[in-house]
Length: 164
Image 1 (cartoon, one colour):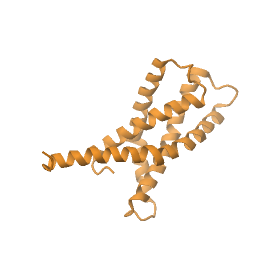
Image 2 (tube, rainbow, N blue to C red):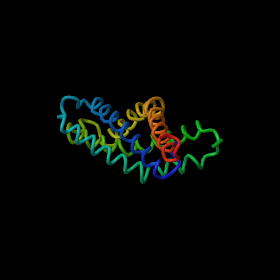
Image 3 (cartoon, rainbow, N blue to C red):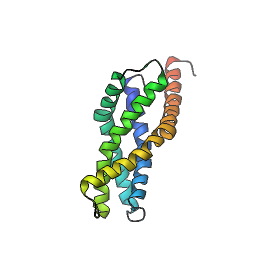
Image 4 (cartoon, one colour):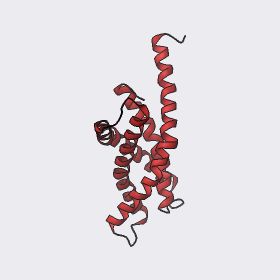
């Protein structure tokens, strides 16, 4: 887990990159846009999605999720509770915001169809929550923590002179 602002920045960068890539393709799939959106469009969506998600994580959702998670009454000395609590609020916050982005993308390429904007948004939020929670908790969370620990552990050891 990150312990400094610099580490938090890199951790968020890696996490956002992984989640945005997977969630972008998931949203293209559930909206029937695979094959309809050209490769250039997908690359643009990945870049825009990453920028938006990272800014949200850095300035709005991340700080709010941590504030809420650490204000709850649970044993914060147990790392797993902290990870699960912060992850829960991060996923909820990011899904609520990024579903707006996904809805806009779907509307741009395909329209909304017969559903109202309200129903389309909450349907998308539900679909994204169902996919994002397991993705975050089972795959991306552990993978990013492993990459982060390996990179920063090695970097700290080099800075302290332990590795030559």
